[in-house]
Structure formats: C-alpha cells, structure tokens
Amino acid sequence: MGLVEKGLLPKPLTKLLNTARSYSLWVYQWGLACCAIEMGAAFGSPRYDVMRLGVIPFPASARQADFVCVSGTATDKMAPPIRRLYEQMPDPKYVISMGSCANSGGPYWDSYSVLKGVDQIIPVDVYVPGCPPRPEALLEGIVLLQMKIRGEDMAERWRGEPLVVGGGLEHGGVPEEKQVAVLKARKKNPAPA
Amino acid sequence: MPDWKKAAYVAAQAADARVNVELEAEGMTLNIGPQHPATHGTLRIVCRLDGEQVVWADPVPGYMHRGYEKLCEVRNYPQINTLVNRIDWLGSFCNEVPFILAAEQLMEVEAPERAQWIRTIFFELGRQANLILFLGDVGTQLGAITPVFLAFRDREHVLNMIEAATGGRFHPNFDRIGGLKDDLPKGWLDETVSAMKRVEDFCDEVEDLMIGGTIFQQRTRGVGVIPAEVGLEYGLTGANIRASGIDWDLRRDSESPLAWKSADFKVVTHPDGDSFARCWVRLQEVRESARIVRQLCEGLPAGPIMAKVPKIIKVPAGEAYVETENPLGVMGYYLVSQGGLGPFRLKIRTPSFNNIAIAPWVLRGVYVPDVITILASLYFILGDIDR
Image (cartoon, rainbow over all chains, first blue to last red):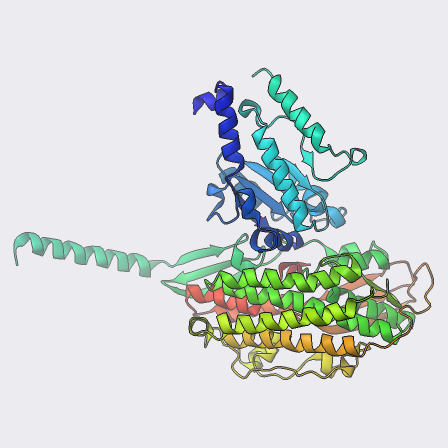
C-alpha cells in the first residue's frame, strides 16, 4: 500500500477505496459520561440504528477500530488512557468528539480537573455540539465524517480544518454545500507532498 | 510401556508440575477498566487473582471527577441547578429535587401543591428512565444482548414524555426554587398514562425473557450475597439494601413535601441479598413507579405552579440538609449559605459512592465471571461516584 500513502494511486481507484472505507467504519465507543448514553441510543437502539450507515459499533478492541467516538467529559486523570488507546488504533484513524465536554470542557470549563477539550490530546475530525447532543446529531456527525473520508486525498489525511455539525456560519460552522466544494477544491489542487 | 511413551509421560508430568508451581508461586493482577463496558463508564478495578478466584479487589474511582463541590461555590443557584443534572445522568430530574428543596427550606418558600405533584411525576419518570436502562444493561453483562435493545426502545417512550414537557431528553433543568419552569402541555397526562402501559409491558417482557429465565438465575442466585448488617455498616442505600431485606424507603418514611404520600405504592424488599434479588427489586420498582405516575396523573390538582419568589435569588444564611430516595439510593445535599447569590459550601452525598464502597468486601473470594455479575447488580453510575 505504499502507493496509497504517497498519493500515487490512480484517481478512480482512490475513489473506490475511499467509498469502500467510508461505508465500513468500525467505531470504538469511548463512552465517558452523559453523552455515552446518547451514543448508546444512537448505536444500540432500534430507533436510530446506526448500522444502516455502514457503521459497526462493536469492535472487540481499539486495535480493530477505524474511528473513535469520544463522548463525554474527559478528565485529566482520563487523558493518558485516551491518548494511549488512540495510539493503539491502526491508521487511517478518525475521531469524533461528541458533546460540549469533549469539545471544549462544556459546563466544567472552569473546573480544576477537567480537560478543556479532547482536541488538546488527540486530533479531532468532527465536532458534535450539544449537552448532550441528540442521537440524530451524532448520526449527522458520522455522515459528515463519511463525506470527509470520501473526498479526502489520502496523502494529506490530516490537513484541513474540522467540520462542525449543524453550526451556522456565524458560529464558525460550514454549510454542507461549501464543505463539498471545499473538499472538491482540495482534491483538485492537492498540497505538495 | 515403550520408552518413548514413558519419556513423554515424564515430560508431561514435569510440564504440569512447572505450570502448577508457576500458578501457585505468584498470583496475577487483573486490571478491569478504566474503559470497560461492565464498569458503566470509567471505573477501574484492580483485582488480585489466585487462579480463578479474586483475592482482593480494589476500586479506583476518580476518572470522572469533575470537581462539583468546588464548582458549586462559584456558581449561582440557577446555574447549579443546571450543573447538578449531570451527576446521575440517567435520572437527571431526581438530582435537582433535593437541591431545590434545600434552598426552599432556607428561603422558607413552599412550592404550590400542583408543582409538588408534577415534581413527583418527573421524579418517577427519571427513576424509570434510569432503571429501565439498568435492566437492559445487566442482561448485556451476563451475555444476553437482546435486553439492552429492548431497554433502549422502551426508554424512548419515557424520554419522549420528559422531552415533551421540559425540552430536554434527559437533562430537563425544569425545577425552580418555588415551583417549576412551565406548566404541562396539553394532552401530556393522557400520553404519559399510555407510556406507562409501555413501561409495564417492558417489565413483563424482561421478566419473561431474562429475569425469570433459568440461565439468568443460575448466573445470579447466591452470587455476591450481602447480609443486611454488613450492608448497613457500609452505608448501602436504595434497592441494594432493600434487596437484603431492610424495609426502608425515604419516599414512604420521610416527611418530604413531594406527593408520594398521595399515591398508593409498595416498598419492594427481597430477603436474599444476592445479585438476583437486587435485579428483581429494581424490576419491581419500575412497576411500582409506573403505578405512582399513573395515580398522580389521574389525580393532579389544579392551581398555580410557581410561588412568589424574587427575581434575583439570594438564599438567607443558614444550613440545610435534604435527602430523597433517588433511583440509586439516598441522595442528599448539605447546603451552607451565607446570604450570597450562590452557596458558601455544598456537600453532595451520592448513593453510588457508598454502594461501590462495599465492592472490596463482596468481591473477595468470588470467581472472575462473577465480578462482572456483582458489579452489574450493584449498579453504580460513575458521575454519581466521582462527582
């Protein structure tokens, strides 16, 4: 797979590979606090049924997962295990940060023991705001992540700004059409390796 | 016996002896958590094993410590109301009530009767949302994957009712000092009564599928027995101590201003004190809770929902301790005010912290699969332990 990492794969093949990857995501559920229950409702309940999106929520360990959903309050004591399990995941790996606490510390923004956002220790691809977000919001976050995977240039996987679910422009979010346009533009003009 | 067979026999004996020596010489330390499905979040338990038996087990809490008591000193009362929702995140409304009652006690405000009744209804809905998920979760941890899907399916009916009235699926933030934020929407009571029917159906289904089943009973009967005296010494409360035969429920036994006195319900106890008893008591509690909600919905009095309180809330100096019977056990707030916008000190007594304190005692000498059974049936929530 050296060709993939160098970005030397023919374009149709890249597209095929990306589409296949985006519809077979194994998610490691890093449930920490209240959001874990909403994540459980999204992943485990018949009402929301995440498997129709091609997401399989029950890997045996982080080593089999494609992306991790960090949901809930990450405390300072919890930070080393989060980092450690993230490092155990095989590349390519993605992170969804679910809920205000994982995004920025949330209601505990001035607490002495809470991490002010999980992006301080691991790179985050999609932020899902809310306290806690509804399961639908998490599903939308997963769809955004799949969009990102489909449009991504494998050589520069970690470049580019994160996507925010449902946020208007005034909140720093990016509307869906623009995201597609940005992703397309990025694909056309890849950054020099 | 040919020589080669003799040699093989001797070699096998030697290997066995070596394995035995290795097994006996040093035990093994098994680390469960901090990220493990059986720990309801982020509890870490360090077990020292001798073969298949636990010599000692040491819970390591603190992975979810968010500094509640310190945060409450720098927030004002409405903000704290938002914050305490997230202590026991499955039955959030139940966390608000004792805090609000403590503040009301210091301010000498009494909420109108209708508000107290609606509070009680939401309290019981919170209890159902909490315990329904427990009933699904305990199945998952014993190897039955179906109950958790049923639990998530039927929990939605309860959450829908909470959301319809308060706007939040499980962090309602609906309670106010002196009453409630809003009155109930039109048609809510009828919908709730029909939702209670669904909850009772869920209880029947779980009893048929899981709790009444042979496999479940063989895994849980006689496992993790807690005698009543030991439970009392460790400060166990709620369904855990009722499963040991202690007939004690603050809903019935305390002078709460909430409307439990107006409802007819049974306090369920079980004499055994094992894991099965704890699961069974919780199942019956969901049924009783559904009965309470139905009775209160049918007899809800008319009237205002808010007493007269000033716009900017300042609680006069003083101290108050109020406790209620939450889904997990007795939850209490010790509120010390010096007349400011926020409390001077707020001590939070949460049930899970005491319930998990008995884990080293009850886990001693059990087999490794039973560790998961006992932890599941003790039922703790990490936000409730660590605050």
